[in-house]
Length: 195
Image (cartoon, rainbow, N blue to C red; front, side):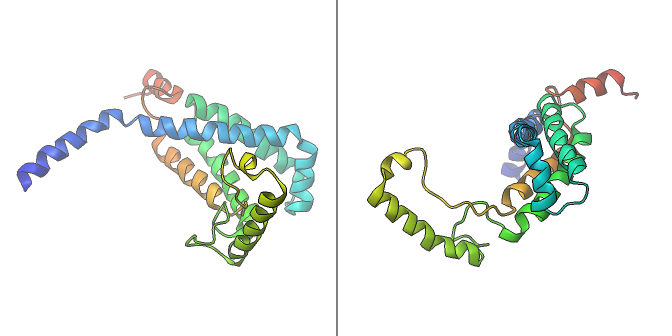
């Protein structure tokens, strides 16, 4: 058995030459998400400030709205090129925590309402009847096939699932950095790091 496991382990160890791929893919996944969130806030900054104040009840709404907006926009650019990856992960993680607890927490875990979900709450369970009724109405009075040709009809639950996922990915980048070869951080470290 050991004669099989040792070569298999050596083969597995060789994949470490590709360890730069995970942080690169995480960065490339998160960059457009942060960019869209930040630019959407910026495009409607007055509404964003109002929402931070009246919808979320946050203190210093103007300051926090601008801070979240600029963190997401600058963070997207930094993640894309792998610059100051560990540093920018910190304010982005804080933004995700604020989003999870100030915006999404009351809705539970699932982002999409699925009554069969392990973490389905009463709100999610109640969505099944509403979704069935909406489908019936659309099948009877609308062009249901056209409406669902881009994907199935769902009810957004708006739970913490996405914010938690982004937080975990950012936490991973905080510990690993931007990765080798395809991040500005790597080349700056090679150029300026002292041995």
